[in-house]
Length: 333
Image 1 (cartoon, rainbow, N blue to C red):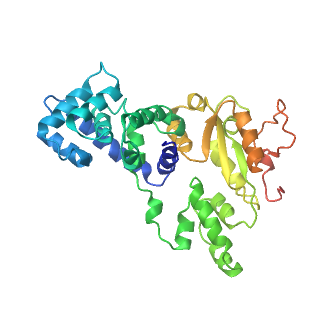
Image 2: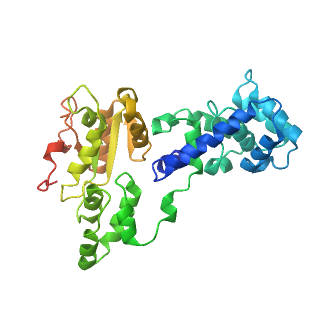
Image 3: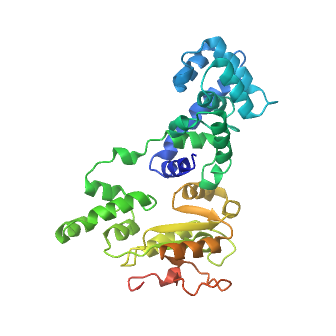
């Protein structure tokens, strides 16, 4: 019913400005959650809830406080609490579901943004609960980040329509914007393209991906690259790879990155945040075993695979395999 919401969430979480928005949103949610732990709940807190959840506006202070008491109960399943509170208050399941999120954001998903209109019944809410159990696989750290992603308005919507400004601002992680700009540049005359090629792009790969006349889709073996035959994983090797990909006359685009499912346990420390951002991108995924997925995607999309692996345990003779060191200006695909 609502699987497409995950794509919406991943794109929002990978957009410019999201992490600043998430930080502010997290502070707001945590502050409201602390206020909801007090008993009785203050009238000021109830007023804030009415602003956050429009469907509660018609309820009295007593009705909202009673609903909060029901939602706090831990001896009932979350969906039972939501259904009971919704029935007694005559508020919608989606509104009570979102109220439960504020009451206990650690364990209950938000019901807001594009999700709200999809939750019409308690069965819809249960399906949403089930779907969000796997949200961590998409780079979403917690339910507060999920709520931020559902509410975030992509800066892309406010970008100037001026092509040169969009080219300057494009980042190599925003694959949908690069596709749009690549299509726009294709229709320009040679002289117009020559002028644009002199722009100072944010990343050399962006320039190659957008300005090159020819392209070849690629699938990147993420875990293989970050280890690069050493015992220590380093995400910087992904950044280094895109710098090398920028050297190719043929745009190695579009790209997809596949990591082994255990990548979250092999990357730690200060790089964990960078990993979460990477995994939130719609073109990045985890899979186990990753080799099977890489080969499938390569065959499905006619893509080359960038890896040090030779896939000797697979019948992959039909797959074009490129080592990072083989990517240069003379590469022919």
